[in-house]
Amino acid sequence: MMWRCPLCHDPRSELYHRDQRREYHQCATCALVFVPTPWHLSAAEEKAEYDRHENFPYDAGYRRFLSRLFTPLNEKLAPGAEGLDFGSGPGPTLSVMFEEAGYPMAIYDLFYAPEASVLEKTYDFITATEVVEHLSAPGEVLAQLVSCLRPGGYLGLMTKRVKDRAAFACWHYIQDPTHIAFFSQSTFCWWARKHGVSVEFPSADTVIMQKR
Image (cartoon, rainbow, N blue to C red; front, side, top):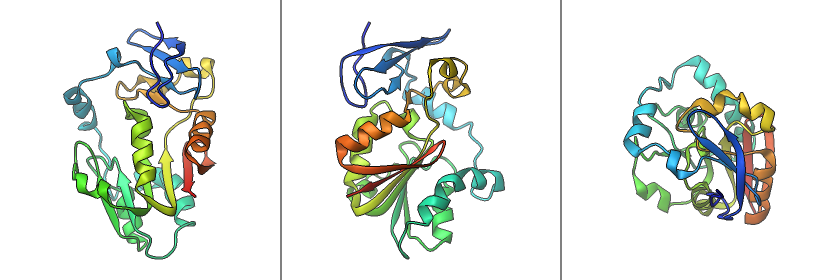
């Protein structure tokens, strides 16, 4: 059975991988690998998974992890640039790191900081770390985030990327039941071309886009 891609909405997809719990399909156009909706968790089940996370703002190890995006993005920002951390989670940390560096920050999280008014404003940069793999409608969310950027603004993402079928089959990343959208470098490049933004890959799991 073919399923409609949640990123580009192409109805053509093919089975990419199947395990004991669910199926993963790949879009014929943008190459996104995704879990079809019958295997999505409910909102309550999803939040219960997130409630188990133990990430704290002053955990040195967690800060080192986030520095993979913080460092290359920080190098691009003008003094006093205003930012939004989208999907900040139960223990916002990246926003604290940017605030410490002198950047005013807002946060948004569907479950933990659902103040929708912050999405009606514009920013010089937006971050979303370990977020896009959780999105049931990544196309709409990414387009919304780019619309919240001022001209020349940056969208910084962190998510692990698909390599090939063999690596995918034994990939720890697909074991998380809340992970339902898996991007490759080619998928990000496709999306960037489609939406007129530039894209670069500072590391194996970080992406920085710039609004033209």
